[in-house]
Length: 365
Image (cartoon, rainbow, N blue to C red; front, side):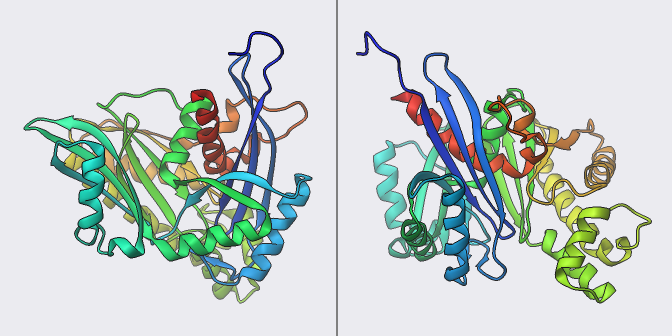
């Protein structure tokens, strides 16, 4: 027990390596006041063609970019929490007979192929018991991914100077960021929150009842599809198309909208299909809010256009219309003096949630 002297503050780091951008954040937790502050962050463009859906394609430029982040933080090594992303991530909700966690882990090992479609020897997996159900059953949340891409990614990070302390999944890190920062109020199991992470390569849609993850869908339509459509339609470079996408977004009546309209409408359709499926399966827990995060979440017109589409769906379903807004942990999270991060909040959400997971570990100790 510490009787005298000042407790040292704890620093935690979250590293979110995406198809479009790489985000690194530092949180400092003041143990004496139980107060967490965002002290540093960096956002870098992911080198082209170096990463695709969580799988390293060209390690050399990716290493160089990651070393630049360490240089910015003025250190040779950092312990980080990082994230599993991409279409290789497998998420399941299952109902099984009640049993101790250790016993279910053995069952999962022997039956991994039936749950994930991948033999246990080639799989990295974990689980969490969500709740007890009637009839001596329990609801379990499963997450798995092919093992080799994870090992390759962890090895690359180790070579650069990042030591991986924990691997999380995007939906849980995103919700943690929004919830613990105060950007999202506590909710009960009787209502649902949707988080849409609109990245470069994929759009990840997650639905929670309270804090329990109910559904995850990786949609293969995202920011790069918009950029590609503009580049091809206007016969311009990728870089110029990206600039125009950031300038005009999905606003109707602009010079770029005719080119990205098909991709944007297809994404809206997939979001609505997922929401309608969820509501059909969970009529007792209506969606009350939809929060948008990620590198393409700030495109002009995006929030309003998504809100119109979702509200039309819920009107057809005779349900109350959910709130649709950006999810910004930096609107509520304390920031270090002089740190300008408010505008970057939706982009940093997952990285902040990763670091917050480490903060919670420090507090538990």
